[in-house]
Image (cartoon, rainbow, N blue to C red; front, side, top):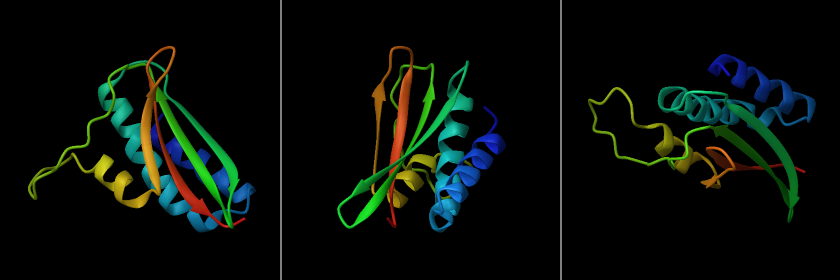
Length: 116
């Protein structure tokens, strides 16, 4: 899945759910995860969005799956580095994030708080 397609899917889905308020950050973070998947894996890349109620608000769960089984590694980019900030951005912007192995490959996910 191309990065542009992933961003479009996220924005269109969130607009349909009335969640435009988190559209920009969700599209940015999914762009980072899909870019990582394209850079490190070969094969199909999937994107899944789930809206769940939680306490006084809700949670948007965004998952990016790829066939590479290796878990993502967050690293510290130096000021002059051209890349290496994607997972730092996810970690600092999402309420939670992580990865889990799949039957084939892995899924990297993040959660954002959303209004109910």
